[in-house]
Image (cartoon, rainbow, N blue to C red):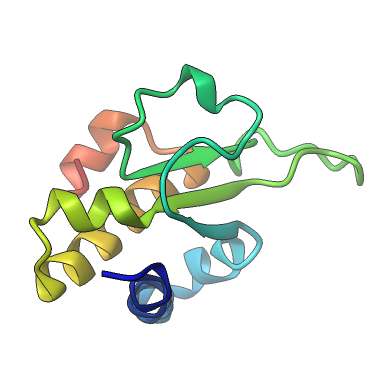
Length: 123
């Protein structure tokens, strides 16, 4: 599947997820940058990754954010080729997994720990 199609589907799913968030989470979520990438490898610290990650949250969580204007921007990175391979190239499973992975990484932005994510079904 080509990256353009995977990006289009991922964008649709991310927008749908953002639309379902309660108001107290929707506004902060809009402050988090979201990027679609084929695979890890384009960022400075990617050499520390395994390469098979589905997504990654980087930057300060809402609990850690500083008010300094030059601070690091929080972002969620979704690795679309990895997601596509993970679901064995099924469109609906891909869309579902994009939503789950996005919520999982967004949960890290909200300051949720792994147990919090698991309790919410986002492991």
